[in-house]
Amino acid sequence: DVKRERVHVTKRFRSAMLQSWNKFCFTGGILEAEVTLPGSHDVAGLWPALWLLGNLARHTYVGTADNIWPWSLGGEHCAYPPSQAAQKISGCTGVEHFGMAAGQGRGAPEIDIFEVQPGRIKKGREQFREMYVGQPFMSASFQVAPGRTENRPGPGWWPGPGQWYEGIHYGNDTCPNINFYGVYNYFPDAPTEAANYWSDAISGNRQLDASHFESKHRYRLEWGLPPEDGTLTDDLVGRDTGFLHWYLDDELVMAFNGTELWQVHGATVPYEPMYLLLNTAVSTEWGFPLPDQCPLGCPCTHHDCDSPDFNDRCGIPPGFCDMLKEAPEYKINYVRVYQDASDPHQSVGCSTPERPTRKWIEAHKQAYTREGDKEPLQKIAEGGGRCTPPAHHDAPPPSDDAAPPSAPPGPATCGGPARGTCARHHACRCQPGWTGPHCLVPVAPRPADADAEVLEVFGPSRRAAVPFVAVGILCAVVLGVVVPRRRRLDGWSSVPSLEHYRT
Image (cartoon, rainbow, N blue to C red; front, side):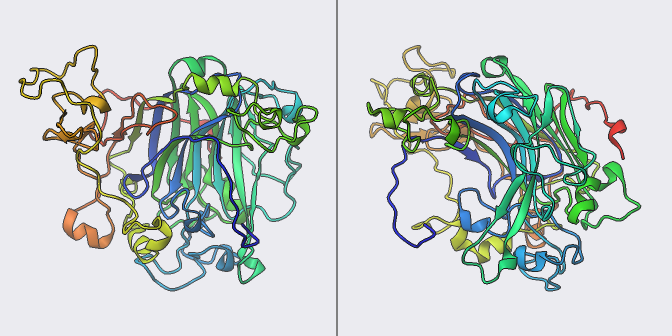
């Protein structure tokens, strides 16, 4: 902890995450996902999310994000002088290192397509008393640094004149998230106070209902890039400065242009390669009772569904423990990324010529690696997962991929005969074209990193539509499999433009 003392903490809940850090990243385009949310709309406690993070920060590896998250100040000049101390890779430094351009600020901004909070507290009540959206809701956010340093609005209060960003557009059933405006990033071991900084959360809450937890709905982000060098000028307005638009079932949730960011401290819409994260978290800071909401006599400090002690259970949201017994499922039918093949700035890859990350990660490998691992990412296992062998090993395999009702295709059967077989020693052996511990993943080429050295080997970066597929994702198991597919989905039609949002 901060006192350098060893502390033992028992965690009572375990949740799942799927992320594509340093494997699949993209810069600009459209991301769409068809999702059924986990749990029940009126039972608080789960925190399902779909979001993007700049590749320079590896989520859960805390040291990789210090003074990197969520900076998006990329102009090739010292646009914000305080960033020289607060931003680890600052544009105020005129030195080219790790393959990065001299004078170009770098960071790991965050775009939350959604963070969902179920529950029973309605609009106009308790912590939502000043808001016209209550639980359940999705929060769409852009988290960015540098943030506003002075005259900030207080949590729970609407911003006064000049306190917040102008020109943000909200759709129906959506309101500004006045309960969270961002955080002050404080580093007690920093050599100077100037290393600490504010980051802002430009966020809107959209009202949900039971249908979002019972059937599939489409969530979409449209990400338009700013100028390549990140430099904005007064003659650039509206969508020419980049933009971020969020949609739910083709209805606008929130939208803004890069002009609104730049006018505060020079921040920009991201130009960083960003990777995908899908997870269901459990946190006392999300949906659990606030200190003034704890039941009478309840300390709200321990949370254990398996304990008979009142003090261990009283601070848990009503119905949460019973819901977990039913194994709530976070179901993702698909995640797809579309890009404009005629736009040379939209790209696929975690290390691009405009924003390389490969040499930085290699030079700071220890921060991106768990203790005992030699490399940040392990090789994909080809078979070897535990399975249940059939009763007769010498019998010829079936002619199709169908499995008997008693043994459906899945991990226990190595995906079925067309994908893998279970050897006598209870380990999967994959058929050609399939990989993974249980042979559930089709072999596919990884999008090449497109920084200068890799270009000599792999050629130009792929600038295309790269769909993801993740099906049947469970809350307490690995969420699914993401597989690059064809360049563009046939028959896709563009969404209506937002011309009236130009400023």
